[in-house]
Length: 197
Image 1 (tube, one colour):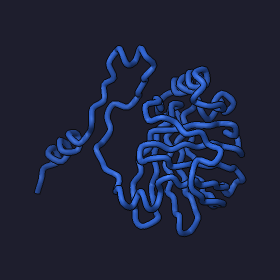
Image 2 (cartoon, rainbow, N blue to C red; image 1 turned 90 degrees about the vertical axis):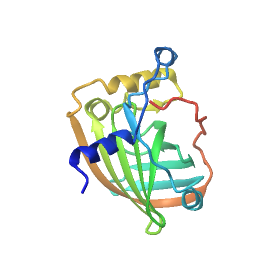
Image 3 (cartoon, helix red, strand yellow; image 1 turned 60 degrees about the vertical axis):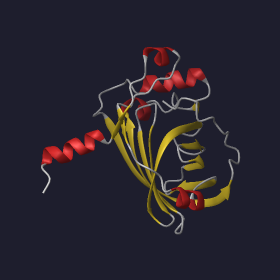
Image 4 (cartoon, one colour; image 1 turned 135 degrees about the vertical axis):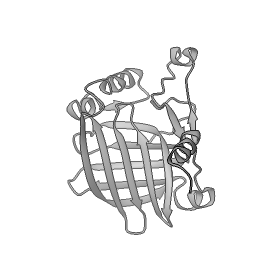
């Protein structure tokens, strides 16, 4: 039986270390991640079930959202109803397949908020757990805008600096998927080279 320290070392060694150089940071390529655990998205299943799919959905509390899956590394979304309405964004995303047409989608916002979604395509349901940073939740108007606008991105990054890591608003919610179709719809595509944090 492997020792605890052996298991720990295996986990640590599976992390891809990302230490941006001073040059990259100076160019605006800010990245708050200290490491990313290596994993792979099942290509065939991803292409069949998620690639280029667009989902419009309404949370049980009436908030309306939409997202598009342009590739296995990004999600592009916008919010049209609720306190975060008026926010358009794209993120580095981690897609994990649970079973056929059931996926977990996770990402870290530049505001410090963590989002985890379980997408149930067959039952047209979304289950979300958002861990809002203090700055993001308490300043929703500042979190509005579009990341492609440098001043919006700067403001969003500043929201992550408010409070401690443990100052969080935890929000579990569920939604009904209203529409599923192919393509970006009204969402704007983004190059993979564009920074997400």
